[in-house]
Length: 250
Image 1 (tube, rainbow, N blue to C red):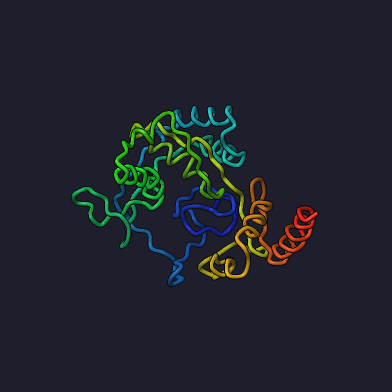
Image 2 (cartoon, one colour):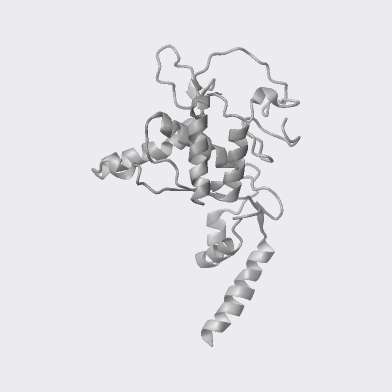
């Protein structure tokens, strides 16, 4: 509905806009292909609008200290300029984490709420296992790096910081390392369509250092890049074995 590209629900892969599924054009069920029926239901909401001003300050600090990549700064500025709306954080699904409130047992917590919360809950569990106070790991002096694709920017620069501010946590995300997309032979990666480079497969044929070299040299830091088997083999034979290998052996 925002840019005209195909979208699957909560977010547009093309322009990264967070969507209300009701706004989708020509809505169709992925399973049966029919148009979905809209029904009324109750949900729990997170009042993101209450954190707008604090998030704007947080963004300004990150920009001044150059802690985020340009795509994260640009997208977050756009989201906040449009206004951060309150969002439903529960879903009517058969699978997922139950809402721990009596009378709402059928509700599940929205995946992107419990997913980003996993950064903290996993740290709490790790601290317990190693008999370390979580406050020693998560405090205002904590420096963190969040590495992800550009489609995950709003979840790490808006949703997760708002949750942390809401619970009084001091360790907001410090560095946002948000990559552009890495495609495969000019097509978007898709595990469901078996269009991917599977790690066991490539490791059975090439040394891990060759893979690291190619991905390092072609990392999508500032623009989309492509993984091509032809280019990968060329970098292995022409650059690593040819240029660098020849230089070292001289």
